Every structure is written in C-alpha cells, then in structure tokens.
Image 1 (cartoon, helix red, strand yellow):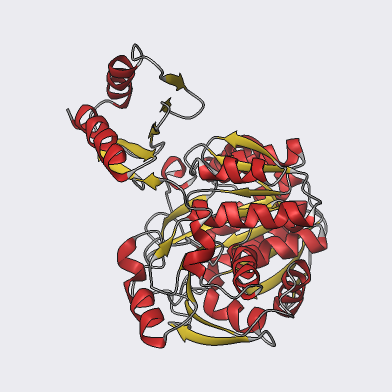
Image 2 (tube, helix red, strand yellow):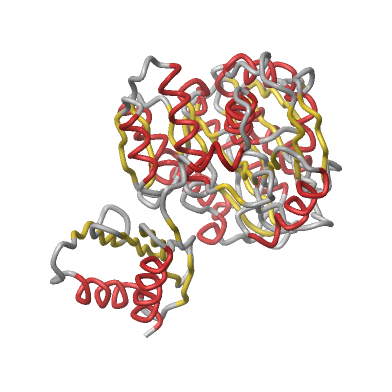
Length: 455
C-alpha cells in the first residue's frame, strides 16, 4: 500500500485508520524497523480487543523475527500490562492499540527495555525514516542470517500480583465499586487484579468489543460516564471507576456519581506515595493540573516539579529527577515503582486503599485535595495560533501582579487565578485551561480569554 507516514506517525506513537492508512504489510515493516533502531535481540508485544489488533500485532512480530529478534507475544492486554512485561522482562515492547479512538483506528505504542518511552526524539523518527526508505525502494529490509522465534506467554496473573504488591488492600473495609470498562481492556484486567480483595464489583461493559457498542472508551468526555454515574447512584455504591480503551487511564466518580478531578486523584496518590517514602520525594505534575497538587505535595514534605503536557515529558522528568510519582490532568498516573510508566489500575488501587482505610465517603476524602474551581479543557478552532497567543499576551502582560511563562504555550498567573493556552500539535486548535479560587472569578477569566481567542 502507499501510506503517508507523516499522517500516521505522531509525536508519541503510530496511529491511523485500518486499512485505509495502514495495514499488516506496513506493521511488518514497523516491526523490522523497531528491532533495527533498538538493537534488540528480543522484544515483547501485546494488543487490545480491536478487530484489527491480533493481525497487526502478529505481522509486527514477523517483521521483528525476520530481523533476528525473538518475540514474546503476551496477546490480549492493557497498555500498562505491556509496560509491566517490558519492565519485568527488561525488553523493548510494542502495544497495538488506538486507546480511546473509534473502532476503525489502530496504532502502536512503543517502548525500550524497562518501559522507557519511544517518541519522535527517542527513536520514533528513525523508525519512520527506515520504513519510508524501504517503502520507497520497494525492496524491504534485508533478512538476517537467523530468524528469531515467536512464542506466546500469558502475563495477566503476574501483572496483577505485581500491582497488588505495591498497594496494601488486605485490611480495607468492604467496598462496593462499579467499574465501567467501556468494552475495552479493563474488562480483561479488572477481574484478575480485583480477585480476592474485599470488594463487591459491579461490572459494566466488560465484554471485549473493539466496536465500542455502548459508548466511546474515553472517560474524559462527560457523555461517556453518564451510565457509570447513574449506576453508582442506583447501586448505592461507594465509588465508580471508568477505564479508557487500553485501560492505561482511570477516571473516578464519588458515591453521588460526581466526577473526581484527576488533579484531586494526583494529589491524593502523591500524599500516599510520599508517606510510603518517609515524607520525602519529588512529584511531577504537568502545568495544567490544579494549584492543589503542588500545595498538597509541599504539605506532605515532597518537592513538586512542573512539566509540559505529554507523557514523554513526564517520563523524561521522572527519570531525570528520580521522582516517585507523576500525574496529569488527563488521568494518566506514573509510578517509579512501575518503571516510571503510566498505569490507571495502580492509581485505582490507591483510591480504593485510601477510601477503604477510613470510614468516610469518597466525596469527603477528596474534598481536602480539591480546593479550586477549574474550567476543564476548552478547545477553540483558530485560523492563526501564533497570532491569537500574541493577542492574549498583549492583553495581559502589562497588568499589575500578573506573571507570564512559556513552558508550554502561554501561562498567565495572578494571585487568585491562572490560565494556560497551548496550541494543538495536530489540529488548528488552541486549548484553554483556567482555574480560580471561586466560581465567579474562574468564569470571568475563562470568558475573557475565550473572547480574545475566538475574536
């Protein structure tokens, strides 16, 4: 097929429509290129429940084996289960998933041994160049003298045992939890991870179905947690948890069915990780998490470090600073105990342990971590990202008591509020996040900035 890799290879992964943008023949080339760039003699692969995933994953394995690498296929898995295998076996890995994208999409998330990320600057650009070269020449990669082996191995029990070894849930009070897997990989992992814990599990949409018959597997969109919210109230459950398609992100609702902000979860888990490390340690948070995150980190003896948005920045900063934990507004949670990789399941276990370790409700527990009023992320389509950002800057830069920074887009901070506007890398969008000490101030700031953005 003739594929446009500039559309297919993103900043952190490969993602596109199957078979229009890519297919198994291209997956085979990616497998060969992955082995060549990593220099690996052995790799591990896994895949989600999308109809195209097994074929693409096995084609990648064939391409890798043709370059002499032994391939361990762990089959159906969540993305963090693939990271577990990469870390536990100390092998580069490839996960076939398009996360929360619609059914016709698929992709590859790649990592080096120990679950270290492969992004545009850490090997993905080289992989793309190799594949493009082979496609242009029509010759394909040279096979090696010896072909690698392809073997299958189930890691689900080991993955679950590893997670449970990191959070003690044995002495918690019994809890009733509704879990919405969205027909994604949470339906595969949750029964094994939760087995034997003092939990009454109410499962929703656990059937693996990559056509997503009930709702999109993207819990950050409020429309996709409506069913979970209602079920939590109907069941009088203690909480609800929703996973995205590849189950590397988790989203939490309290006993009333009200969403708990990922910033509050970041602060809660940070306080627990700091307690585990004697009140010392670095915690990473991206620049659009709530003010409450660095506040809670400092109150618990830790050092907060602010980064750009995006998992490659968080993981790089964690490796550099030796951080024990990191969290993002998008419900990605990163743990030093999990090879600095993101795992929504481990964050969920922390929430269950925190709730079950005391007698109060989840809403009461998270109130101490949820101190400000946020706008959520608001996207606006613009003709000229640079010009709109310049207009915002000129509107605020001369105001008294205001600071500006350009770590990621434009962040403007005052005593009672802050906002960040950053351009999308892939679409003509500006993304606004605002926060203030009260609702009225947040609304005023949000609307003022949107007026400039939308002109």
